[in-house]
Image (cartoon, rainbow, N blue to C red):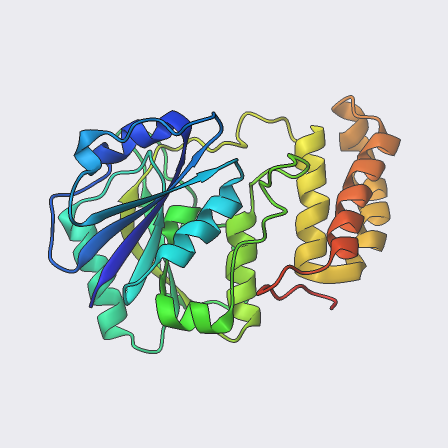
Length: 280
């Protein structure tokens, strides 16, 4: 069973990628999608000049665009999404292969993330295996999949999240990817086993709960998962959360406008090709 590790990185992040790689192992290859925002891409570090490593460059930015580029590079039986700040062990690769070998009916597997020593768990993980019917909150490095089945289903990342225009933060694009896999009829199963190490922090952790970025994300994700019901929910949610909104010094009219505008943006622009948007 062959494996691709699909790494997305941007600009000088490419310099960190050699630290992610394990020693060469038969059947495991590394596919790197490298975005660059300058006139020319940075020089590749010598640690990537290996037969088991492929790098493709693309100008511009947008993490979901990079994920889709990496997805297009996949040519193995199994692929695992990755970043330039994670770490693996040989045991992780054994876990990955064994899981798919022992579970031929599983199309997408969700694993656990190890944090650094002294850090709390990445999140509160269930202790038992679960065949999912709804998309949970996940991190990208938790997601592994059978390449041919995801590709046949036409599932891709929604590039409106974390896109080049900056309107929507990239947070929750992974949940939407899993949602689309489920809507496409794929078997998505959570396995209570660690697959990767990643620092506990998230890119959205430092953003206050009622910041415009978070409010827009809430409205956009609601629309993406639940369709047009997100519009009345924006009004109801504003009323329900009014005390908290005021306590956090957020203008309730601004909260409603931000949440509603993001929902309407998702609904008006429609589901991108290969996705399965609710309410369509």
